[in-house]
Image (cartoon, rainbow, N blue to C red; front, side, top):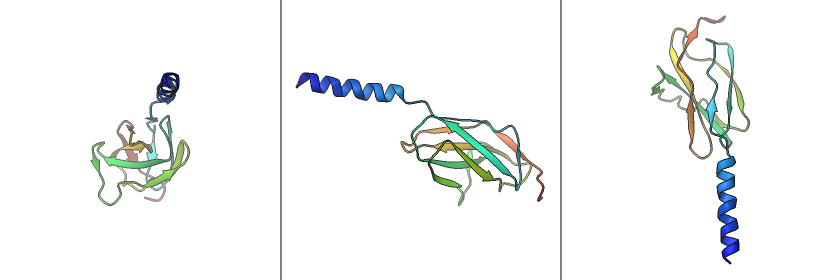
Length: 111
């Protein structure tokens, strides 16, 4: 019985240590009304995505613009007005989050 409990605990530790830390890639540019490919690594899917004004304030009514995303990328048509500073946050199924650096939405083709 001791062997089974020890093997179970070691298996859990291996699973936790083997899991990659959740990180999100900071976009180099984002343009109003144009597609932006958001990518991240690690964590445990599915994932939810939110943008923060100024990198700190969740937008009421727009908390998650994508939910239940199964993979490590999402193409979002930027709906935030140009010259607005935002940050992107990815949340995994365990509740872990990762935040991008704050960046500005720039003037897009449909502005």
